[in-house]
Amino acid sequence: MWFKNIRAYRLTIPFALSPEQLAEQLGPREFQPCAKSQ
Image 1 (cartoon, rainbow, N blue to C red):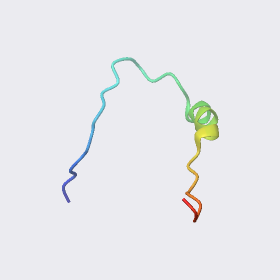
Image 2: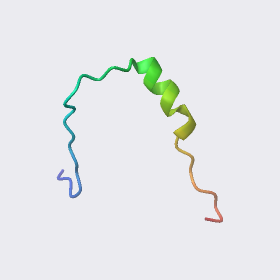
Image 3: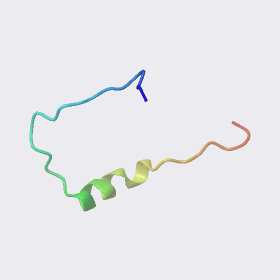
C-alpha cells in the first residue's frame, strides 16, 4: 500500500512527556464523530 499524503516528522529535542501526561493533555481534544445533521 502506498500513501499519497504521508508526512513524517523528526523530533529534534527529546520527547519529555510520559504516556500518562500526554493522554491527560490530549484528553480535552479527543475525537468526536460528527452528528447526523452535519
